Amino acid sequence: MSLIKTSTNVERQLEKRGSKYRQSVSGGIDGVSYGKGNGGGSPKTISSGKFLGRQAGGARRDQVWGTVFYGSGYTYSNGGSSVAGRGFPFGYWPMCPGLYAYPYYGSGEFCPWDASDRPGGVMSYAQVDCGACIAAASTTPNSLAAFYIVGDKESVNDMATALKASSCNANVGAVTDFNDPFPIEQYLQFYRASSFALALSSYQNVAANISYTPDLGQLPAPIPDGTNTTFLSCLNNTIGSQLLIANGSDSLGVWGAGHVALFWTMLWIVGLM
Image (cartoon, rainbow, N blue to C red; front, side, top):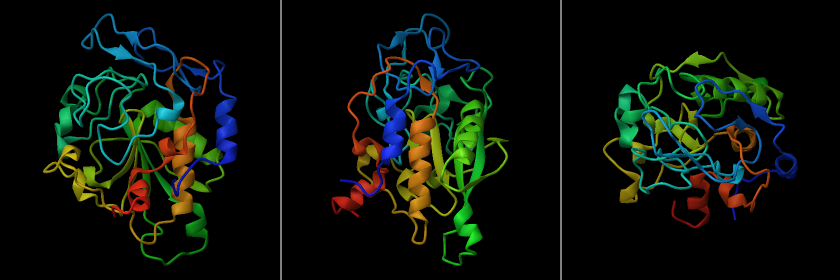
């Protein structure tokens, strides 16, 4: 059971996805098409370039949610928290966390943030604010803390458009080149095999500090008191259902709310926090 799960409308939207949701992605991996469908199918083997022999594509839409830790969300390739040597289940490189944490858990081969051959363009971000919180002139601590969507430029641009059109009442700022703006401790949720993320300015997850590793069993920090979790849940659902991924089979596969849950909510439910 989870506190945060998809709404019925999101599930219906996903069920209707198909091959018509195709979109051009600059620098995309050869042989992989991209869109807002359900993904799936068989992975393709990269036949040339610096990632020769690795696999790309094959992951399903319902597998797009990772956890609070970088290196999460992979559907195949070697395990552990390091992204080094892994394939690309959703057709995108994992994020380059930036100089602050370089080279964080094998991320060096996917850096710098402005690598010209990154699928979708250079890493970028956009600020996302809770419109309802601003309208209500909330004075609750952390209720006005800024969220940020982070990933390749085309994905951030596309998600900014999706959030503006969603029911989240989100105020979305300009898409800006990444240039190392966030400490790794502020990342709240990773998506799409750690190639896209949601950050929160009030969040301080010391378990993600470069001194630690998820493999040591460090528990993540809880969501800050006062955070508007209704708004957060809407952001999480919208990102998961609208994020560009590698196309594949139109079948949704087995849908489970557990894939959607933010990692720390599951820890709360089972009494670990």
